[in-house]
Image (cartoon, rainbow, N blue to C red; front, side, top):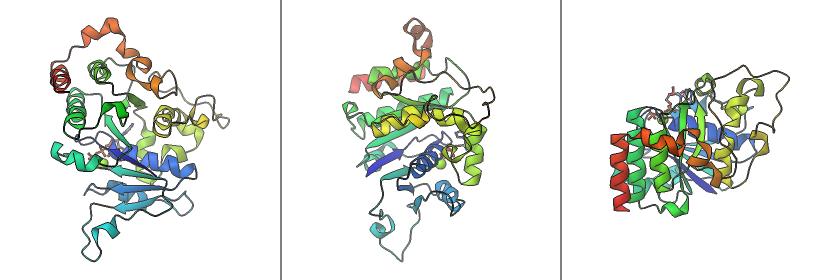
Length: 282
Ligand SMILES: Nc1ncnc2c1ncn2[C@@H]1O[C@H](COP(=O)(O)OP(=O)(O)OP(=O)(O)O)[C@@H](O)[C@H]1O
Ligand SMILES: [Mg+2]
């Protein structure tokens, strides 16, 4: 059983989107995912409740709820047949809470949006995971997801450089797509949508799945799942990771923004400050 924690103290970075779509992915592959919602907003629980009996099952646990009728351990009980536990966490998690939240996590996913403030918060979060939660980077448990990427932008350069310095990979680049908004409304995921609608989105999960499971899922690769007769409309998707191999999903290999000759231009006082602090403390 693999425990995957989706975490970023910044609100709206895509934690619930990643958690629900990941649960949906595993469910469509015949696995038994459990979605554990620690956010009092209960977005993941609401999403799961919208699912139809015909959809592949996802066991959901409202971990945020305080239920005086049962013990806490009974409330958080994982079914024996569970293959993956995906943990959705609230915004505004404090650094001192990180050791507990990440304890027992096989993988920690940090989604980040392409804005200065989000990149700065993400850098802090990574620093806290390394320094406060004391997760050794050699264990390859922390992966960043660049979320809502609109086009091939230079916005991520400072983050990419920072992550590269610390040896933290960007494990997926997810485009901004209305399919995620629709999926959230309908209790579904891009992996459950018609491939002619969501093929470009589905393909972007290939590098993440490989990093999480250690095995490539060919149906997620551009050559894997053939379109169902219809061409995908021209989208605004960014360049994809060069390879599905986990090592090659590291920032410099997959992110064209990280070209060394451009790195100097990416100086970003806030991120670079955190980078220097973190590197010095490690
Ligand atoms: N790749 C994407 N493309 C389009 N919309 C997205 C994408 N990722 C997230 N969104 C939308 O952005 C909003 C915030 O996403 P989400 O709820 O997943 O963030 P969150 O980190 O869980 O927020 P919170 O911290 O409040 O729990 C939602 O409306 C979601 O549908
Ligand atoms: Mg959320």
